[in-house]
Image 1 (cartoon, rainbow, N blue to C red):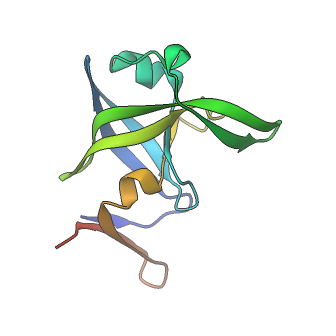
Image 2: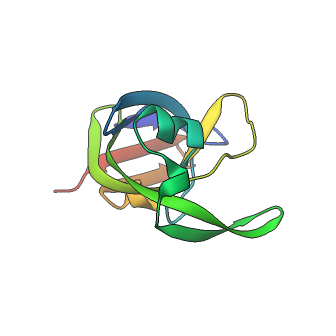
Length: 128
């Protein structure tokens, strides 16, 4: 799947599926994030309660290091690419024009990802 490369790299209509449904959100691609990050509202909409998650991960915020809930969602779809059982951190990122998460390495490690600034193309393809 090819996308026009803009800064920041925004992926539109990323679908998260969970135990109680699915939801489409817009996300920023963050190749420096080990985990994908979604807001608490998105997690709740697809059937998870981050407050009761026993798994926690330390994350660095503007206010220092905090422990954020880590959940496993059933799947994440970007266009026609699907990854199953993806670990995501639940944390409300500052409001950025409708962005509700960061697409990190917990998703990207399932694919070949090419960011070509010279041609202005982002390409994410299935491995193999």
